[in-house]
Length: 125
View 1 (spheres, helix red, strand yellow):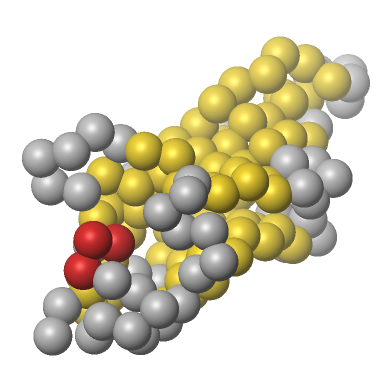
View 2 (spheres, rainbow, N blue to C red; view 1 turned 135 degrees about the horizontal axis):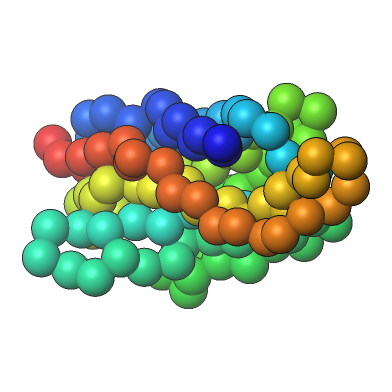
């Protein structure tokens, strides 16, 4: 089983900063790409940022230049540094990871995608 736990959400004033974390635990062979999604009230879930195995990154246009995604492979942890926050950034932020599972022989197995339960970010004065 693989578990994802997000943390770091909260209430922040416009223009402020927050850093989200996502810790991946369990039994797997490798973590492949790691994503942050968000879902605002009444809206569809959207991809915010992605970081690949080789640490190449991609961002939604709405957050480019303000958010930075990173990962610490030794800690199986992903981060989202969010600066210059706006009320429109208010949402539940979800961690999404693609992992290669480990077989009983310790070799690479199937790929699976997992979601965290989310952490709420509220940007308001």
